[in-house]
Image 1 (cartoon, helix red, strand yellow):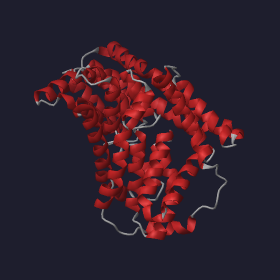
Image 2 (tube, one colour):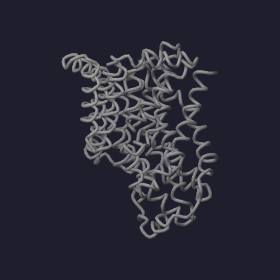
Image 3 (cartoon, one colour):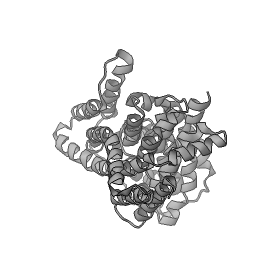
Length: 416
C-alpha cells in the first residue's frame, strides 16, 4: 500500500480510537503501528520510525515539563485569577467581551493553558453575564477567542514544540505572532462575537447566586512579575547575545513569581500542580512523536507538497499542515507537534524562515483544535454547564477566530 495512504489510515484509526475514549497516547501508538505495517515496512522498521519520531521531540518535552513551574505558580498563588480580575475590573461591564477576551489572552500569553485560563475566568464571566444579560455563548467565545490569541504568543507547549522542531528561538516565535494576536483579539471582540445570535442564557442567570467571595489574591504587579522575568531572560539572547534556555528561564520566572507574590510557602504545591498539568501533555507528545515519525517517513509530505505545487499554492504548506494535524488531534499542542515534526523540512524548503514557519504553524493549529474529540471541547463546555449541542454551536465561530489568526500570520510572513 502507498505509504501516504497507509499513514492517513493510521491517523484516522487514532482519531476513531480517541473518539471511542481510548487514552490518546495509546490511540496514537496503535495508529502509528497500523500506518507502518500497512506501508509494508514490517514491525521492526515501524518501531524504529516511531522511536525516531519520539526522539526528535524529546528536547521539547523536557522544556515543557520545565514550563510547569511557571504555570503552576500562576494558578496556585492566585496570580492568574488576579490578572483576570484586575483587567475585568478596569474595563468594566460595558466592555465585558473585551475584558474577558483580554484576560484570557494575557493569561495564556503568560503561560497558562487555554482550558485552565477559561476555567479560571468562567466564574467571573458567569457573574457578569447574569448581571448584564450577556448571552453565555458570547461570553464563552470571548474567553476562547482571547485564549487562542494568547496561545500563539505564549511559552505554552504548542509554541515550545514548534520552535524546537523548526530550530527557532522560543522568544522569537513568541514575538513573531504578536501583531496577529492583537489584531485577532480585535476581530474576535468586534467582528466575530457580534455575528452570534444573542439570547440570555439561564445558566448565566443562575450563576449570580454562586459567585465566589473575595479572595486573598496577590497584586497585579506581583502577579505579572513571574512571566515578565521569564520573558526578560529569554530576551537576553536577541538583545545582548546572552543565551538562556527556556528550561532555565521558565522555572526562574515561576520561582521569582512565588517570591514576588509572597506565596513562597506554596512552592511545593505549585511544583506539584505544574507537573500534574504538564505530565499528560508530555505523555501525549510521546504518542504524537510516534505517529509523527511514521508520517515523516511516509510519502505523505511529498504528496501534499506536489499537490499544492500543482495548484500553484506551495506557500500554503505550513497553514495546511497545521490545520490538518490540529483537526486530526483536536489539540493545538499535538497538532503543532505532528505538523512541525513531519513537515518542517518541506515547509522550510519553500523558502520561509524558521521563525516565520514556526509562528505560522502555531497560528494554524488554532483553527480546529476545539473539535469534539479533544479534551478542550469538553473542559470548556463543562466549566460553565453547557450541553454538548450548545457547545457545538460555538465551533463555527471558534474556527473563524483561528482562521483570522492564521490569515494574519500568513499575510505577515508569506505575502508582505
